[in-house]
Length: 104
Image (cartoon, rainbow, N blue to C red; front, side, top):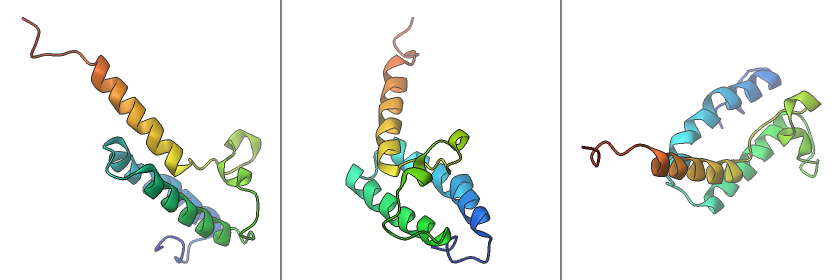
């Protein structure tokens, strides 16, 4: 909420979200501290604030927010999907990492 109510320009607010807020989500996402439904609520709140920042109506399509940057979109990750991908990636890394204790 601090970012969305700041005196930054709209592009600076979105850049701050992408640079500071989403990276801060990585640890709780990878450790499964919250359920997918909780991340959906976070995503819904962020969508609303980003649309307000861009002066878009609430009913506007989300494709502009989540589409790829090469296509002229913002390229924000979807929080609920990102949490699932991070959990899968973390589990894969744990399962495929070498076990130092079991090696003689």
